[in-house]
Amino acid sequence: MKNINLSFTGEYEYSLDKKNRLIIPAKFRKALGSINDKTFVLTKGLDDCLVLYPLVEWHNVERQLGQLSTIREKNRNFIRNVVRYATYLQYDAQGRVAIPSSLLLHSKIERDVVLIGMIKKIEIWNSKTLNNISYENYTNSKDFEDLANEIDF
Image (cartoon, rainbow, N blue to C red):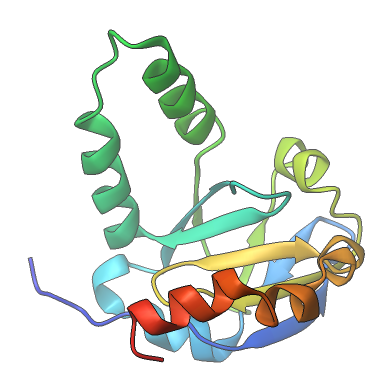
């Protein structure tokens, strides 16, 4: 399999249409590359957001999940909650994907969304939920400084 350098960066604001379709920014579609065949996998995020994985990156997530022992209850529950909602989506000619209602409910997304590039994946947020997170407090915290030092930021 050809190695592809994905790089999803930036923030984009969009609105869902009446059929709960979301436009994937052209920059993100271009970064997806042909190896992914216009396909993303959408699932619940660890926060109150949704995560959109390129197909190739989702296969990496599946491999990692498959390495967890399902004998342990916490592993079974984690795997179940990640893959249970995983939905394969191909964007249409206008660059739109339809978001399932169960995932909209989880993320409290109604209409206005913010897409955030997270290098190898994309987060999809309810714009109000995202605005309630205090990034300013975090970026001024010791934790932020410690992480920045770890990566020589």
